[in-house]
Amino acid sequence: MKKKLTRNIIAYVMGIPSGTIESIRAYEKREKQKFRVMLIRDNSSKDVIGERHPDLDIVVRCDFSVPARIAETLAPYQDEFRAITCRSESYISRFVQVIPHVPYLRTPSTESLKWATDKLEMRRRFKLLAPKYSPKYALVRENTKAERKRVIDKIKFPMIVKPANLAQSLLVTVCYHEEDLERSLTVAHKQIEKIYKENGRTEMPKMMVEEYMEGDMYSVDAYVNSLGTIYFCPMVKVITGKNIGRDDFYNYIHISPTGLKPGTVERAQIAATAGIHALGLRSTTAHVELMKVDDESKLIEIGPRVGGFRHMLHQLSCDIDHALNDVLIRFPKRPQIPKKCKGFAATMKWYPKKEGKITKLKGIKKCQELKSVVELQQLKKIGDMCHFAKNGGKAVFTLTLFNIERSKLLADIRRVEQLVDVQIG
Picture 1 (cartoon, rainbow, N blue to C red):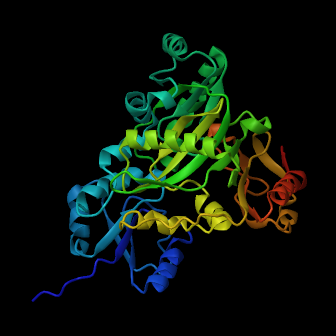
Picture 2 (cartoon, rainbow, N blue to C red):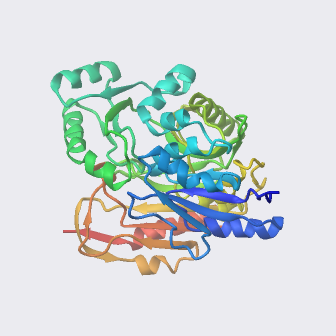
Picture 3 (tube, one colour):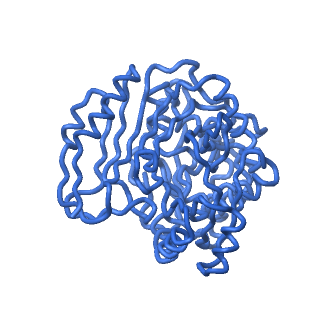
């Protein structure tokens, strides 16, 4: 008689973020269960996050472009899989390729993932099923006078120009005149193929425009079970480069929790729910970006993944294990969300005021001495080139902070702004 196998493999497609395996091991001890962590990767990808982790149990590789190879590679584990996830939006297209070959696991549908990773398709779904919460939009087919006129007549100024398949505000610009629109499209068309490739995107590059919404930006991560029931994390306040006077839309600071009134949070959750259900997302974590306009929430976009920096933000401020909950919702089990938070957390992405080569970089070591600072990751050094996010550039450094008192957290954020001196030659 064949021995019955235990379903205890938790599989990750194309990458395992830092801290994820440690969360699973801690859960094992609490629940007195044993899980094996698997990484499934495409042979064509050179850099895969987490592949060298000492506590990773299984790594399988195959050619994702051939469905039969995926099926063949995963076949020996079909009776042992417990859950499967993908934590990076860049690799959702590869997750879509894997899902048909794990038919008995709780996953989002491949259609919902395609809708949620293509901003044009996302807007079409919102227009169909959540029109109250979505701005006007249009695809930009080419950078010609006639096409620009068509788009301007439909959307009106000001408008947002963005690629359909990129995150982190890459190539996102705001336009107030036709000259702005022409310039933004020219820059985007020159760089878009390269940036798609650098970010692991396999989709065909395309640009779109949206009605510009003036308001306060917030985001919220949520866990969606297989029946569409949604469990929300605390709201996150987002301060963009635009908010601090930069001609760029990168997320400068995230702060959580927000202190918003319960009615405002409820309205935001209603809008988020409408968007999540419009995309048909299930058995996944969803990252929802919202614009608060005159006390009403509008949908910016929704990603079928954990939001950037969210694991540390929610862990520090509210003891929420975001990495674990992303798995639990697929088991399925109710995610663990404490009712009260213990403090306030923030993340910061630092870009210089202008583009060019770094000639001076001071103050970073002093920042690390501040009481609220938890982690600082320096991404660039003297001599490196800096570009704005709208032109495909990455931050000079990222910073994570926590303090029991909101006032002290804000004070240390201000000290960072005063200490750091990045000069461009």
